[in-house]
Every structure is written in C-alpha cells, then in structure tokens.
Image (cartoon, rainbow over all chains, first blue to last red; front, top):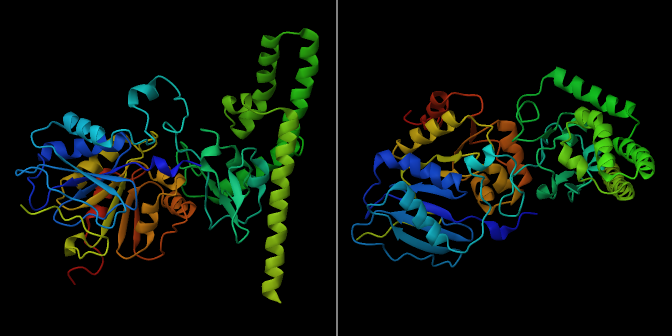
Length: 304
Length: 130
C-alpha cells in the first residue's frame, strides 16, 4: 500500500483580500508546473480554502505587507506561508519546494525521463497503475482474485471484490482485465477502451468471453501453462547448462502466452518459482472460493 | 492587512463558488492529450473563480486520500474534470469514497475538446438564475 506519509502538501494559491493577484500570464503555467511535480493545488480567490485533512499546506501569494501569520487552530495540518512577490514561475516553484523541505511525496516522472524509457518504480516514483472495478458490471465471480499472483485483490466485509493493494500491481500489465468475463476491470491509464474506462459495447463483452475461452484452451489454467513451459525449459537447460540460452528460451516460450493476455515481458521475467506460483494460485483460489461461499450463505440468510 | 481566509469546510461561500470544481492533471501518464489538459487549465485559471487541482486522481485513490472522501460527501454540487466517468466513479469507490448519484458531473478530457469541457465546467448550475 502506498504510504499515507506520502500525502503531498497542498499548495494554496491565494489571491483574495490582502494579496495582489498573480500575473494572469503566469497563473496557468504555475498551476501546471506544481501539478506536474505532484502537488495538489487550490486556487483560492475571493472564497475560502478548505483545510487539508492532514499533512502540510503551503500558502503562496503576493502579499504587499509581507506574509501573514496563519495557522490551523484545529491542529490538523501544518500551514506554511510564502510571499512570492516578484518571483517568476520557476522561482515560485523553487520556493514551494524549499517550503516542502524533507517531506516525502510520490512524484510524477519528468517528461524528459519518460522519453528515455521506464522509470524505476520506488515509493516516490510509483506510477499509479492498478485495476479499478466497475461495480455496476462486476458480478463478484472472483476470477480476477484467483488469477492475480500479487495480492492486488481482496474481499471486502460484505464479501464483494475489493482492490486491496493497488501498489502491488505490476505496472503496465492489464492481464487480469483480460480474464474478466464482464469487462468490469478498468485500468484508467491504459491506452485504449474499454479497459481505459471507456464505454463497453456488446461486442467487447463477447470478445472478453472469447478470450477467457482461449485461455481455457491453453490448458485451463494460465499458470499451469506457465509452470509446464518453465519445467520443460528447465529440463532442456539442465542439459545445455547455459544460463543465457535458458533465459532466451524461456522468453521465446512465453511470448505467445504473453501476447494472448497482454502481459508485459518484465512481469513474466519477475514471476516467482513454479512452486511459489503454485502456492499463490492455491491461496488466491481458496480466498475466492471462501468469499463466494460466504456471499452465498449470506444470500440464503437474507432470503429466509 | 486582511489575513487570508483559511477556513474550515463548513465556512460560508460566495454564490459563484457554490459548485466545486476539481481538475485532474493525470500527471503520471500520457493518456489525456496534453493540449486539451493545458487549454482547460488555462481556461479555468482565467475564469476568475476558485477551483481545486489534483496531480492525479488515480494516485490519490491508491493512497485512499482523505480529500476524496471530503469531495464525495456531497454537501455541494461537484464538477470533476478528468477522464472517463466510469473510471472516475470507480476510483472514488476504490478509495472508499463513492460519489453520490446526484450533484456530480464528470467531464472527459480524453475524448472531448477543451472548448466542450470548459463550456460544461463553467456553465451555470441547473436552476441558477431561474
């Protein structure tokens, strides 16, 4: 789970009474620069700004008489004030960064970094990639829970499916959405519909059901197929005794499977041992089965 | 000098700020056209009213940011400028802050033009002025 300690400071751009408005030509650029560095921003004009539920708030404005003394008397959050009179957009952003100090926060990648390839996924550079459930479509069949090896899914108190550990999800892997027969799993940062959250057409539902059937044809259990291929490869490599050849062969064998489920190669390379896969599959299946049984029992209880 | 009005969320607000506007920058991915999100942000910045901006609703939902629950509480009409409504609703639900069925409009920068989004987000609320 992404730590709550990474709650970014909220920047309040204050232009109300007692402050001179920012230059109109700078305002949108300043907002964009702060947002692209991961800050939440509130433009407080004549109206008031809500206090943040925790963490820190950095109030910036052009205060002709110097920065006012402001504090949150409820003690819910720390309030810092910076006078940015005469500062350029870049200097204002620097002043916000200085005010933030050592507070940790998740940061979006810079455009130049993105252009150079994937960014290392750490607590402070985490790309928010995870499944989102369309509860209007989900039937709580728990296929996704059984499928996922990384404990992303869980079961809520009412025995419905829940995305429990979003940050366990493997970035850019939409594979669980491919096993959902109801097209109920979205990845909002996916590049195309309906997985991105776009409208679901009848043809999409049909196609997804077909994909589930295809995975069944692959052997009934996609992980069983992975294990089988891994075991075959291991047998061959033990004779060949070449780690490089082993890796190359493993990749070749998995390519078709990866294409079918749109699983990124990095995810396949990071799969645990066949024994660990087996253990996780069984654990996930047991959780799914228990949730369905409990939901069934609750339904019977309600009807009697 | 007059001190900035940092008040609690129960504070009275000017009538023109009755509708709360939230703009999502989708800063962690390149799926919303940059030209659209920049033009919408510029339009909002020039509109002369208060609004809120978040770097990325997905990232907030994953952290189950308490601000989402506050937004979803439904004490004021809410307009969210982000992406597909189905995805936005799912994100709030994931964060244990499901959006109310009434009083929420979601505008989609993935598919609509900046002009369409701005016209929708800055339009007078239904019933205003009647």
